[in-house]
Image (cartoon, rainbow, N blue to C red):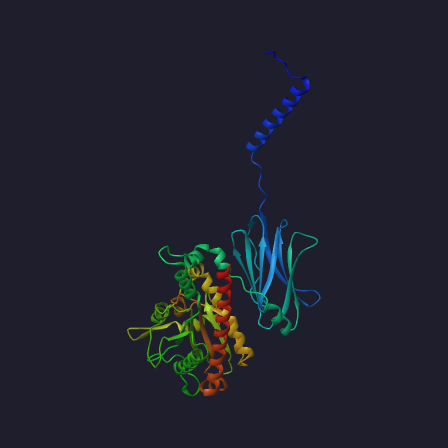
Length: 427
């Protein structure tokens, strides 16, 4: 066999091939720098210069990938900001209060969720867009009619950021035990997702009369009467929902026991009903509280009044520490979010259906809410120290109006909750 040497052209092609092969190997060993982290330096809010609405600005130091905007309720706008990595350390948040009440951030796996809460008298339609002269993202809110906003928001379902923050909690609910059949597992899951138990807690009772109002009207009596009417409405119009009372007569129940009753009965919602009193007889209006740090002196005073316990015959005020409340919020952020949602729905019912003056939706460290491991509210139906409100709240007519408003918000929340669970289950 005769050896034939390769041609010069073939040899040069071989050398070029080997060169690029080695170069590719070397490049694969060199780490390529990842995309720089996007810095969200500040979130600001302002009234629009044209007077037609409001603007929320996200101050970024470089462009983000994308964002989405939905408006599931007239007073709630939700955004999701997508980027490879967003750094929020040192971020400056807008002040609370005003027409744009609050902005909240939630760290998700691949993005940030944002909840923007509006004042109850604000009706706007929201649209997001990139700022043409910077890397900022703008959320423009244009004033509109109440009807247009309510129609617009019906197409959206609020996002529960909590399920994305803590996916293990969702897995705990939806995991299928290996020993059960698929049909049985589905039925068990469907039962867990149902809204079928409401705990109604008439405030005070027995040796604890609560607030004493005009003409010696006692808070414990008004609270019990309204609570019973709420329970009657639920049993009549929501027959698939079980009602559990923490007390059904003039009995003293310890604050801590009330939450335990709710937990033992696996409630889906805990409603504690109260009435207020103040040294100034002109003060009036409803208040709806969910658990959290108090943000005003008035909330602090109400918290002290409702956190009163009896120890060896002596009255004592229990105050939850800031650390306890923060730990609760971290561990039960889903409960907090749902509590805030139904609190807003209830406040809306008081204003627009019961025609009552609202003193707003607020947070405070109530022991009775802290002990209940579920979405929980404390309602102050009005001031017994105000002669006009006392007459209303002590009358059968007034109690029926307030009970009806509370019931309607529970009914609407049940519909919204079960619709969201159906969508989650189908997905």
